[in-house]
Length: 239
Image 1: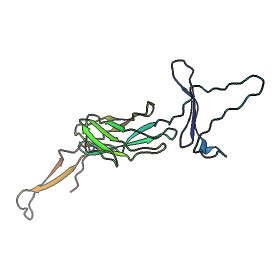
Image 2: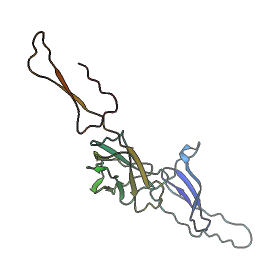
Image 3: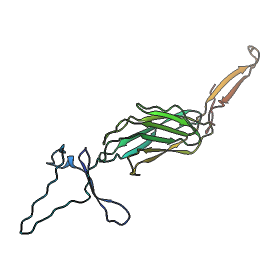
Image 4: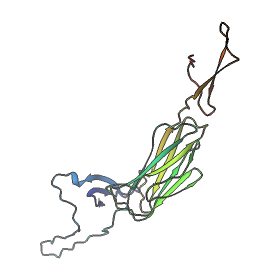
């Protein structure tokens, strides 16, 4: 099987009839990078050469089909920075179509599983229709994605539980009814949950009126916010 995409990317597959299906033996080769390679022609022509000799020669091609290439979607999941308990964070999902594939012809579906400890909020992305059910975010769209192109990203904001800790892993998948290649259809992203910083405050008070030649006492009260993290070093009060 010879596959040539509209982006001029060539792959060759052989079927050894061993039950494993066609195996890629050449490519993907971007023909655009080969010096002197002409652009992809708009039409395909097949020809047969005549034979010489007294006997009649018969030429036959069996099982030949010319079809469009299926799409080959892939997904990437990322986040920015460290998530902090009690705060918010955001994931970004990016869906692209391989340059050596064909355009999408059906509905693309992205399912993003948010780990426990994070609560998905309202996802958004230009052209995407998104919904949230529990810890799962589902986004779909049916417009055509050409090979070598990408859809606009999906942003998934999350609320971080106050008890969240350690490293949490989110998983995203993408599917298309015409795309049967399992490679690149799942992506994971691990996000560290950072410790809360302390939030120290101080107040000072005194009792009564101070008299010349007498004594007086100041009282300093140091406290940490209930929603903050613990102190991890010495606390210094300067008066």
